[in-house]
Image (cartoon, rainbow, N blue to C red; front, top):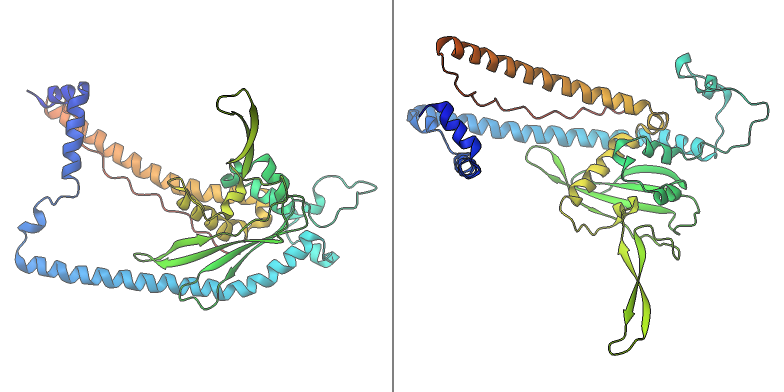
Length: 347
């Protein structure tokens, strides 16, 4: 039986395919025997290289820790700028004419649109944070219409590092003006870090209790059910609360479904590294283009690697076809490198 015939049998038989996949799964991760075949002296040298590799991992962790500490130090300088941003957004401070001038004419918002003769009195920048969130892909599907109603009252988001912690844990604080949904002035999300393999990882988070006003809890919905008293025709309507999708579930500590905690970390990372530092650029939509370009750059590199691999395979196939009249099945594709996440540089 030729290789091609064997491949056809496996491809057309679900049982044979399943058996093959199970066998490959058993073999995955097993040694090819090459390392074991090396002389003892060479294997000892590999042990020495392993120790060096472990030292590299330790140094890399120290580097990541130092970077985190540096970010913590610079956060105080950012805080001064963010305070002024909040004052302008909320209308607590009116910037001077000098502060409103920009060097690049293409970035001059004063030249966008027409100036009305009698402009409506408007305080600060309405819905600044809500608009910023809505322009980020992470929140496009996450925010419900009711969420947007509550987030109209969001006046600031800030990141504060926790004092007295060995690792740079932090707290996200969401400030709200008086609103018809809840009485909290601030909602918090506390994030604790842990030592990873060679980096700092999120360990766990703590949310906060939202004091919802009557009938305004966006994380649940009221469902009415009719119940009949056994042995009678008497019925009654029973109302119960069932969970529903809402951005405000982010502040809950209860994570029931698989993957919710990981998604929780992902949202936290977006707030800390994208939304807070680039809030204006998300409001205008510029940040979306900026981050898309970085992602596209990573995708292009990946596509180039795949194209090179496909070209190599095609060359190998052409060589096989020239040397043998009978076509042979393709070899396995080389492993695809994981896409590198774009670095998010602080302004």
